[in-house]
Structure formats: C-alpha cells, structure tokens
Image (cartoon, rainbow, N blue to C red; front, side):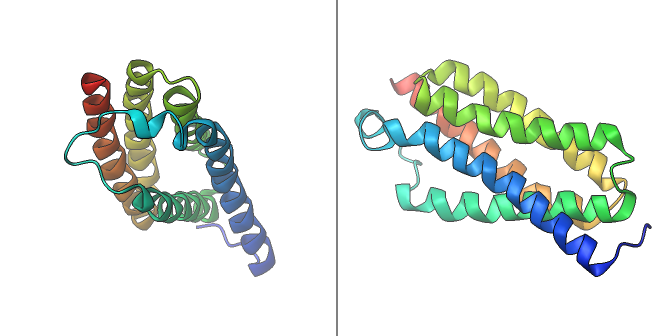
Length: 160
C-alpha cells in the first residue's frame, strides 16, 4: 500500500469527486432539453420510479464512484493503467447514455450504450477488487442501478 500525505490524498479525492460530478453535470445538460418536454410524453412501465428519485440515487452513486476510484488510487496510484482505463471508460459511457436517451431521443441506441456501460462497470468492479474490496463493493449498487436502468430503458423503448 502506498502512503499518501493527508493533503495530497484530500486533493485526489476532490479530483475524483470533480470528475464524477462533471459527468453528472454534463449529463444533466443533455437531459435538460427533454426532461420536461419529450420525456413526460413517453409511455412508461408500471415499475418506473417517480422522477424525484433519480437525482438522489445518482448523486449517491457518483459519490460512491469517486470514493471507489480514490481508494484504489490511494493503494496503487495510477500504476494499474487497465483498471483506471476501465474507470474512465465507465465514466465516459455513463455520460453517453443521457446524450443518447434524452439529448438525441434514441431509445434503442441508448439501451445499447447502457449494455456497454454495464460491462464497463462490471470490469471496473472486478479490476478494483484486486486492490480494494471496499472500492469494488462501492461499485455494486451502481451495477445494480444500471441493471434496473437497462430494464427500464428496454421497457420504455418497447412501449414507445
């Protein structure tokens, strides 16, 4: 385990949080154009959660994503390039989904993107597991939520 100074570690945590919330903010920009116009007109399945639930869930998930990345960084720095490449890929694919679903209104393409996101989350979880069990476990709720989101995306696509 590499030791880091408290200040260096705190700055790194802020960096991981900034990266996660940058993805969130950019996704929010892509979502904003459709959330009150196009999205409410879609037929949704009975298991569609209330709209107010998405914000708190994603906020918690973005915090867990950042903490997981930071925990692995504290252990190995960026020496495990494949693990951090997977981490970066899941962030990029995470951003891609609201662009496809809300921005471009391409439900089928968004579902395909969600499958890629799911795979990248699972790969990151597995790679993080080698370094830090807690970091890997922090990715488990994210994987579960994206599984649910995939079912929801598929149902909305089929209903519309």
